[in-house]
Image 1 (cartoon, rainbow, N blue to C red):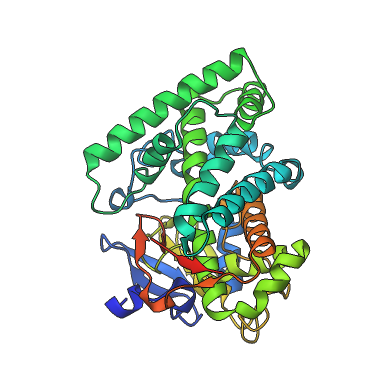
Image 2 (image 1 turned 45 degrees about the vertical axis):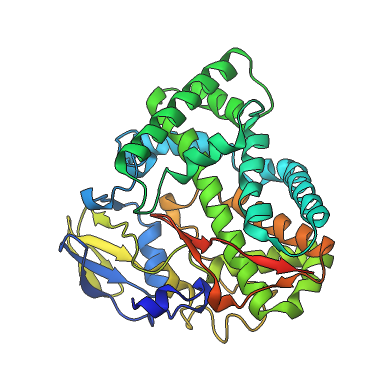
Amino acid sequence: MTDDEEALPLHRLPVEPPGPPRRTALPDSSPAWHFTRYDDVRQVLADARFVRAVLPAAAASPLSDTTDAMAKQDGSAHTRLRHTAKGVFTPHAIDHLAPQIAEVADRLVDGLAHHGPPADLVGHYTRPLPIAVMNKLLGIHDLDDTRLLHWTERAFPDASVTRDETAQAAREFTEFTTRLMADRRRSPGPDLISTLVQAADREGGIPEPSLVNLVTTLVVAGYDTTMTMLGNSLLCLLSEHPQDWARLGSDEAAAGLLAERLAHLIPLNDPGKRTNPLRATEDLEIAGTTVRAGELVTLDRGAANRDPAAFPGDPFADLFAPLEHPTLAFGGGHHYCLGVSLARAELRLALHRLAARLPTLRLAMPADAVEWRRSALTRSPLRLPVTW
């Protein structure tokens, strides 16, 4: 990727044309098969004979660089942990939480309106929203937002943050989560941590460090990915699709379709920034290509989501059109994102409530002048000046 491409908004990045499986090399020079077509990528994700093959060079945080992390597990341990968390994040469960998410969005929009234009959408909306939502859903009432923000932003930091800073933040966050879970065991409430702990205790066989790591990682992922999706979606909409803003605010169902399409089309980071290879556990065939047991596989879900064989026509022509096939933006099979229902609800409601309250919102700077916040996992606007 060129320096010019790294400065582009993520929705404008060129995407590799999908094609047949080909040989490639990982950052550590390990050979791998690379899949880019929608049907091929979806088949690999759905096949339990492919397991995670996290390489030492790919470790980005003490939260992920541990055998307690779900990303390092497969088999029965992974299944038990995933089954426990899956019940907490079902679409039905998230529907019950939607009013709380809407309440957070409305409060932040009120603050933005009170501040008046010009204002920075990142500082007033995209950054505080996922933190406030997570605090509310987890039932955290005695933690300074600044402290939680400090921990989450150092979980998967950019190169300017030292390993010692990252490790210290991970230790503090893990200790806080451990105490919080112990408290919820003693005095459970209606929050997600209480529900998760009770589900884990019923399931049985889940080591406490794995459960602590799961809760901590869910908080981090819920913050980082939601802020990233929301900031990049707003940049795309306000810079290139202002005609869609009014409908977005007047129709929540339409907002859901638009949020799904933008999550499908806009990646979380620059292609190739992070490699998550899979390893075949036995010989198998994908798209006429034989993958031998032990061989590594990489997937380009961004290319697959733009595959014209699955998604014909201009994907940005109608942002309210339903997707022709399920998106691979959140993974698939046993590698499917646990928090997808929550992410969808936050993106839908955050966009809808902002557009409903501020129908004349517009960027106060060219999209090409945006400065970027980069973490090991994501890229999003550092600031997003707007007026109305």
